[in-house]
Image (cartoon, rainbow, N blue to C red; front, side, top):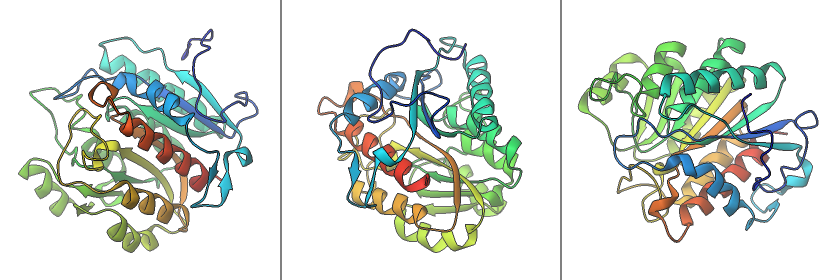
Length: 290
């Protein structure tokens, strides 16, 4: 059992369809066992859901309404607390099921390591999968303090699985020198600091490809998203992030799933981080899924 079937808590706005009826499945991955600085992202999914209630169903950017979509919010996964390996196995098994059932997964983190499990499942179905990674951090470490399961490692794992040439990272402004050397020499595509303009330049290369989008909220400057585990000064605005997501939506790529990770609500009494995250989720659903 992946979820608490008795769950009756908050759902993401307009996610009132049953699993069978839905094309899109929203699910929480409340894992933060490997974070290197501030814990608490396991509480992110529910705070994003709560913030979504303040959104309009209509996107003025895309001229689309959530009423046009069929969305099911499955709630948060039941994960073995403290056991990263088993938790990742459960997330991968759920993602396997979603892809087998032709659902469009929208994952709410949780730490960034959870994305590794979903990408593994997606790669089983689409061997030519490409990942668009939007983040402040390179996440290209082999290990952190001797631990290979760390939220600083998922993109290195993904590049090893897909081939580095199929990984496109944007907004990166933090990492070890070795991580940037790997990006420069491996064949992966990394844009430092900015997101929207370099992404627009790369999207024509991905036309017709199957793409998974993983978004770490800390790509935003802490002024826009202080509620995250590893904030990094010098980030982008929420306006630029929206521009980037809309660029993906209007391109010729086929997005097969997405996630948003690393919202840690305890560090943001204003809830601006969760509010931004909820809006990004709405725009991704409306933009990525017809």
